[in-house]
Length: 355
Image 1 (spheres, rainbow, N blue to C red):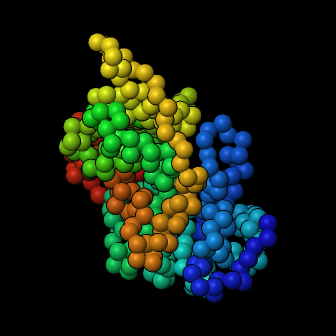
Image 2 (image 1 turned 90 degrees about the vertical axis):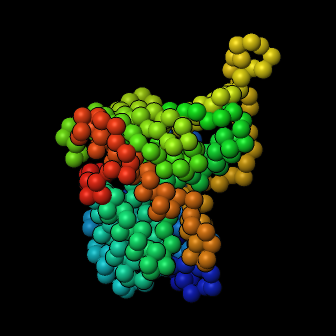
């Protein structure tokens, strides 16, 4: 694919680079194009930069020589523009925007280096970090340097999840009472999306407390698990995450007057029948005539708008910390015999390894 690295001086065009040239950084679209799930393209960091008229992809970095070669060939970059050492890339290329698409244990190290190198925006993979302490350092460094930060909890930028949030806020299912999330995968790697959506659909009110259970031990790894979460508003949430389960991702929002079901395959709005004593649920059309937009380009545009003085992206450092607090809270509760745990009681130094 031909690249254009000769135009970064155009007004309003940002020089973009990717650190971590693996799947989500570069070629994940090869794996998802035939997926039965609803996935909008572009998907992945390099494809998103290439599709955005406000960015030009100028460089990449990865410790693996094979991934470096594949990245350069795929995106039409000279081999010397794809580096083994991201510090050298940051110094030589001086990108405006950097994607951090390395494994989670290195998120903080790489993001902080990018901020120190003078980037204007960081597009960080989820979860934001391996511990709350690391996450706070990332957010604090970005704030102190005036660097915009977006975290790739991309369902916040998905038009249908945004529509679900509007329906809930407008009372389409009555008063929100409960949320039920199912996912197949690990708590931080996949479950972070579920925890983030619990917060998003309940109005981004920080959870009060939770009870957590891990499917596997030892607890310093990142297995599947389950949780019961209570919000100050009274909304209760249940999370069921099992590695290798048959339900890849589904969320139910249950209210006093109906239910929304949304996920990789489902999209439904159910409302009580006011004409009968039992008020059985009837299926209604889910309003989905919306502007077509893939989530990652929406988040990138929000990140660039934030660089130019606009509001923070819809998935920013603070929302990502709240999602991480829930995932780590499951681990913390499980380590205490699945006792109820206030979210403010999660040790900032509790670190869980995740890819």
